[in-house]
Image 1 (cartoon, one colour):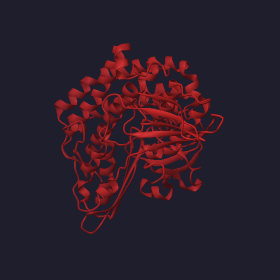
Image 2 (tube, one colour):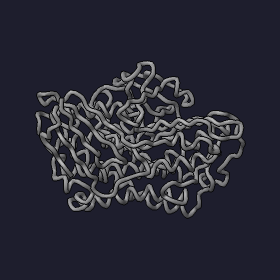
Image 3 (cartoon, one colour):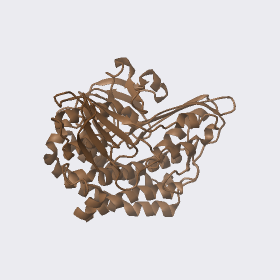
Image 4 (tube, one colour):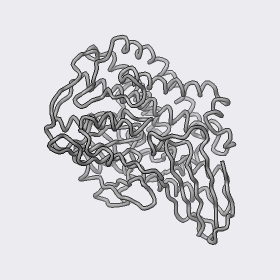
Length: 472
């Protein structure tokens, strides 16, 4: 038995490695995606006052702090047993949608576009954001501008772009200013133009990636997301729904507070990332996917005119659900367009400038669950408190965790297709990493590498002799 190790996986948020086991004939037998960092946030928050949780939980992630901020605040709302003011809810929604835009822009333009623009088999020294800037300056600028659009909205609402503490238990801390609303509205047309340009370009590229579409985690699975009664795309509020690969509902109208009745969490010795699964099917058969692909598969419509038009075209890709994880990239662009449209609609409502933005109360429940859709998928925060309002237990299920089983199966599928024999083509190495990038996993959250990450892959025989190696 021989083992290939990719350590670390590049162009993702955080640090991980991939191991691929080959038999004596050089054929892939197994593969694993290892998350090599320990989070520990559940234990760190024990003993803290519950009302500190949103600001503390925002520190989990430097890329998607708003998702943790909102899920945490919703869990605290449940502990307070309050209904937050309507204006506050809409302002929370705007901030969350702004984060969807900026995070999707980061994933598509900065982390994955080098593969689309330069090719999976291109020179790894150039297959990065600097290579994108040299090859296509306009696309490089578009990526920066679209991400800036989302970040500036977060800053205008929350006071800063990273780890804003503006979302609080019971609502938000300050109302929206007129000048900030007008500034955001003024930036909407450019953001829409960028997404339209990129969608048109990306759809033209799909024919060049047929082999990747066919092999990048392309298999039947369950899908899970928040859904609304009208079936439209949901990011902030709704029921949990699970459907199968044919679109048939497996579980519906699940109150997020009851998530533990349906979602189990397995732990494997080779990874710090938990493996959630659908309990009625057991582990690991209960594998499901979350995130942009799951959300678009499950939504009857987006709920905005431009995004609905794009969704109709997206649905033409397959007869049933869209199963290839390669299409996560396509789904991100459609969701970004939807988010921009919804932000514009909320800002044009007169009540968005209302001054009543927070409900006040003491703790009325000992347990609270908050669920929201993060850029990468469904995010769950669950807190228990004592009589003094101090956290006694916290459980977090991160979107990347929901996708853990699917990512591992995707690595195995790609490895079996592209690895043949005892040599390691660089393009194969990149494709094994690229299937993980489809999910845009966020692993270490606040810790990120600057510039080119080191990668060293070795193929060894049973005796430990190096048969082949690739370095970056």
